[in-house]
Amino acid sequence: MKSFNLPKRAARLIVLQRIELVNSFLLKLRKLLGRYFFSNFITKYFLNTRIIGDKYYQVMMNEFLSIKDYINKDDKDFLSIGGGLGGLELIINQVFKSNNYYFIERDYVSKKVKYGWGGTINDEAYNDLNLQKKFLKMNEMQENQINIFDYDKDILPEKKFDVIISLLSLDYHYDFDVYIEYLKKVSKIDTKIIFDTIRADYFKIIFKNVEIIRSDTNTVHKSKRIICSNFLN
Ligand SMILES: C[S@@+](CC[C@H](N)C(=O)[O-])C[C@H]1O[C@@H](n2cnc3c(N)ncnc32)[C@H](O)[C@@H]1O
Image 1 (spheres, rainbow, N blue to C red):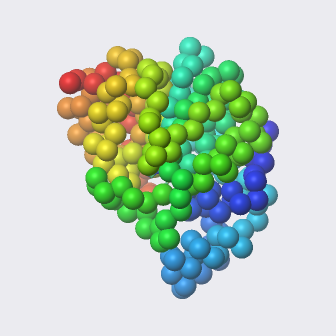
Image 2: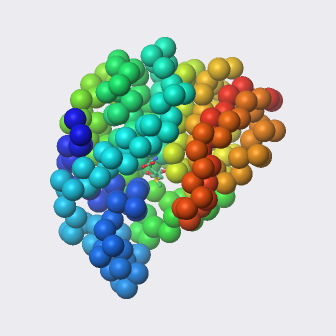
Image 3: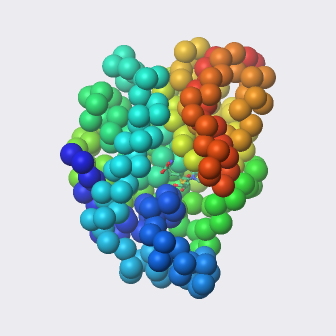
């Protein structure tokens, strides 16, 4: 598989989750017509589903390459926080078979997507949980591997995870504190917690182990991808 199969409406969510997939013409339109019009009209009617499926696959493969050395076949229970449609987890599942995937996401699309830092005010979202499940199943994840939780409505899963991943979401758009107590409950001493942040050093007072695995100096947020384990308190 070198591309993802997409339900028709999924292309829209993918470009909101990954704005770098939008071509320069549509980005110009966004600048000209504004974010509201872009999120609610252009992304609904002007995207080529096949091209977005190809590009999303490439981007998720690159993300996988950035973390693959830190996961292995003994990792079975994966938690994704703000994983979007879950393209990264699909690739993990292609490589390391038979894992269980838990997704915590939100079930609405913000009217105007700003991609800023919200601190503990965390109200932006761009997902549709029915569509996410459909997308995962269309791309070879089995029904019994998929567990999707709505952050705003559901009781979150309470089990000990082997790996927790949150790319461009936790501590990138909203404060780590939003999830800190929950993460303490669902991690073991060696649970690997991988996320993007602009304040990698700060996490040295939160975790015993903190390692920078990638630096994105060219992006707007100039973030670092870190892998952490072992909460200190
Ligand atoms: C920029 S997108 C990144 C999506 C995906 N991780 C990726 O790398 O393509 C941020 C995602 O975080 C989700 N999100 C926002 N607040 C959240 C929360 N409190 N819990 C879980 N997901 C959240 C949004 O719905 C959105 O899908």
